[in-house]
Length: 388
Image (cartoon, rainbow, N blue to C red; front, side, top):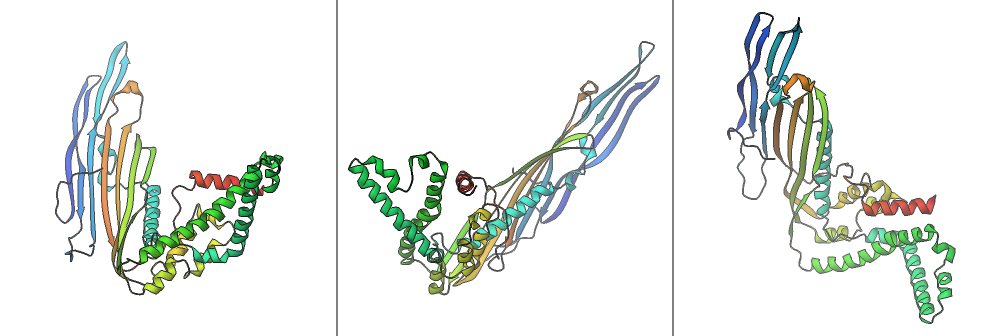
C-alpha cells in the first residue's frame, strides 16, 4: 500500500494536528459544554541521505512513511432518570487517536520475525543462484550409483518382460513378473514403493542427465560476467486483539528481493561446482537417509549447496531490499445502546530498505514458507505407508 509523504526532505520529520474531545449535556441542573484539545501526531516521514552511484552499483537507501488515514471519533451518550425524568444526559465525542501512540507504533513481532526469515531466505537463494539454475547433482548420483543403477536395471528388465507377456496375451503372468501379486495390487504398500522409486530414483537421475546436457550447451556460450536476481514469496500476516477499550487489527505484508553481480575468475572451478562435484557437505547431506524430510521444514540441503555457489567467482556488487506495508485499525468496544458511533482509527505504515552487500552473503538458516505442498504430502504418505 503506497502512502504519500507530506515531505520529501532528507531526515526525520513529524506532523501533528489538534483534535477535540467534547462533553456536552447536563447532570441535574449543571450544564456541560466542555472541550479538551489534544495534540496528535498524524504523519511522519523518514528518508536517508542520497548516495551518489556510479550507475551500476546499488546504493544504500531507506524510506519510511506513517500516516493516520482515518480518525472518526466515537460518540456515546449517557442517560439516567430520576422520578421518571431525565436527570443525566451527556454526549461524549472522543477521537480514538488520543488512546494510541499513533506514529510510534510498530507491527507485531511475529510479522517482523517472518519478514526476517524471508530476508534470510532471499540471501541464501541469491547465493545459491550463483551456482547456475542448471546446476546438477553428479556428486550425489555417484555416491548413490550402485543402488541407483541396480534399481534402474531391475525395473527396466521387469517392464520389458511384462510388456512382452502382455503383448502375447499372457496377462496372468504380468503381476508375477512385476514382483507383485493380485493382493499387492490391492495393497497401498506396493504403490508407495513404486512412487518412492520414481520420486527419488528415476526422476532425479533422468533430471541430472537432462541438466548435464543443458549445462554443457550453455557453457559453450557463457560470458565471464553474470548477474542473478531473486525474490521470495510475499509474507502476509493478520492479527486481532483488544487494547485501550478498542478492538484492534493489524494487516501486514512484506517481501524481500535482491541481486548480485559477479565475475567468473576460474571457469574450471565454477564448472566443477555446477556439475555437483565440489561441495562434499552437500553430497553427504543428500545421501543421508530421509534428509529430504528435514529439508521440507528447514532446507539444510539448500544452505549446504550454496556454500560452494561462489566457487570460481569474484564479487562485483549486490543488494537485498525489504519492502513492507502495514495497516492498523481500531474500533471502540462497548454496549451498542450507549454508542452513537463506535469510531474508527486507521493508520498506514510503509517502509523500504535497500541493504548494500559488501560481499557474497553467507547462507542463513530459514524455515520454508509452505512445507505442506501437494508433492511433499504425497511423499510423506508414501513413506508412512512403507514404514509403518
